[in-house]
Length: 241
View 1: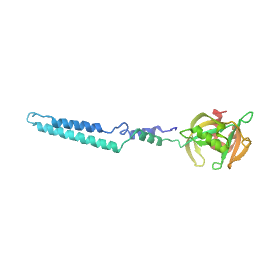
View 2: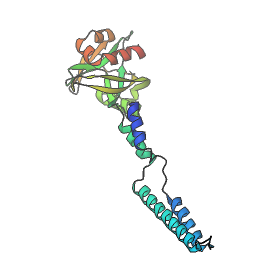
View 3: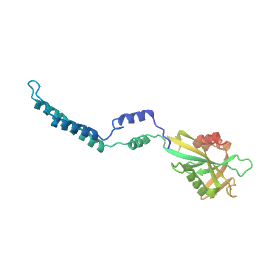
């Protein structure tokens, strides 16, 4: 998981939790206070001048009782408000500005002698054509990509190879949501080793979804792609072409 955290927000969190970080349950405070109390009770005190020894003993007993009670209070408070490294980690994760982690997958027309096109799908909600994009999983991400491609294109998963290329964080305007959002994109190149006749067509449809083969130049000249997804097009152009 990628984290993008504002330095000021992180400092404020650490300042807020500084009394909890590294704090241990105060059992040794109790032991120390009780040990002091026992030693005071068992000790003998002589008079000093006109002050009887019992006065000193009484004062030290009160101090011992106070330390013991304080230790018990601190131990109870620490147990009630136990704050572990997992608590801190989760609070730091909550500061993460990255709202979406996606794996961008570029599939090239390697069935041609001179491959120069990539496979895009049409997204009705965005009214735009995109590279394959799957939510990044923390475990077995490439396995998930191959499975998703296999289902989408009706290709045996064994005929799909994936190669990780790079990743980057982008802050861009989300057109449907009309707000700026932070995206973490991992880029993969997927090679289909055997294409069906349907997949070799310039345009085709599978399970109601429309697909298009397009060159990067065609994408850069497409007004809607420039508006919604030009950063990803340039990412692919930089890392794969």
